[in-house]
Each structure stands twice: as C-alpha cells, then as structure tokens.
Image 1 (cartoon, helix red, strand yellow):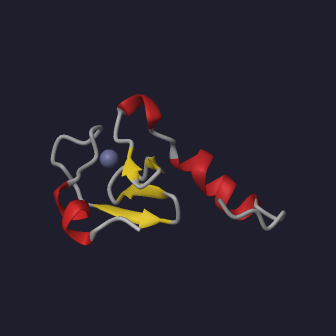
Image 2 (cartoon, rainbow, N blue to C red):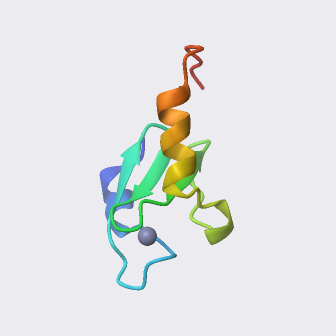
Length: 70
Ligand SMILES: [Zn+2]
C-alpha cells in the first residue's frame, strides 16, 4: 500500500495541473487522464515512459481470470 501522505504529494507527470492519483491495486491511476503508473516494490514509477493508457490497464483488470496475485 502507498502511504496516503505520499500519495497526496504525487501527481501525474502527463498532466500540467497535477491532478491527484488514486491507487488501483498495483497501479496509481491519474484521476484526470486515467493513465496508470506501476508501483514497483512499494515505489510508484511515475516516469512518463511507464504510463499505461486506460485501455491497457483496464483491459488487464477485467481480463484477469487466472487468479494471479503479485
Ligand atoms: Zn494525468
């Protein structure tokens, strides 16, 4: 889990007005552009290169049927 204080200071690098992020499992999701950033070993990767567009991570969320837990 990401600390709420940490979460509150993080912002999407793709959006100029620094919208807040929300946690979705192992991802931090921008509340504006809905790009998702992976949380790797407890550390959010907010590099623009790491961003997953909504179509990518939403597909992964609904498509997981193998019960895999990371
Ligand atoms: Zn954004």
